Image (cartoon, rainbow, N blue to C red):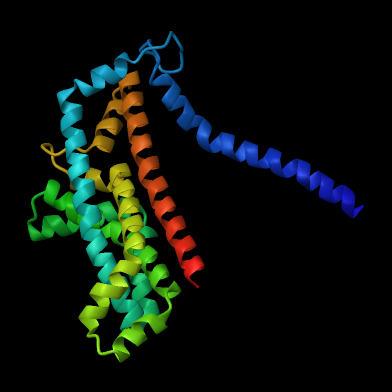
Length: 269
């Protein structure tokens, strides 16, 4: 009886996993496929072409939106990398009272709905008289990207052997010397991994950006959203495919760096 149940489980598990993967990735695959459709109608295949990518790269408005998104992703990932890293180090090494509550507050933006965050940022910027646009976008994206860096670096710090820093302290190294020569080099893969995830989240954001952007500053996701609302063409599919590729690249590199770092840690123990 147990053998029969085990056999059924072996048959059911691959089928269930295949169905889940199809449900998750079939819509994405359809977007990629129809970006090469020669017809303008989405859902009706009329032949293969790369013309939509040619039109996309020659579109000045799309190029401007891409430039804004890349600048925004770069600035927000760097700023969130600095803030998240310093916060994780301070919380892990500072032995602060109420560290658990502080950590929960640091990761809270990941759990708050984007609609609520967008409205909250808009209300704050309006009350303070902050002009909406690239500056407001950088501030908001940095805020919700910090937790991704913070969590990565915090987990790396927890996995570090504290004896390394203690030995350096016993040898007379100052706290700044330990931070510069020991802590930062050891956690740098986690910092880079977190920054890549932050860049991917920034490139993907629509809801929060919608509330704090201006007419002069349009990001690529907002351009895709407005294009789809006006009916959509395979040019939008081509743009979505490129965005998917960029996000998969950032996430893949992040996971690769993290896996190499974990393997190096395991081998050094």
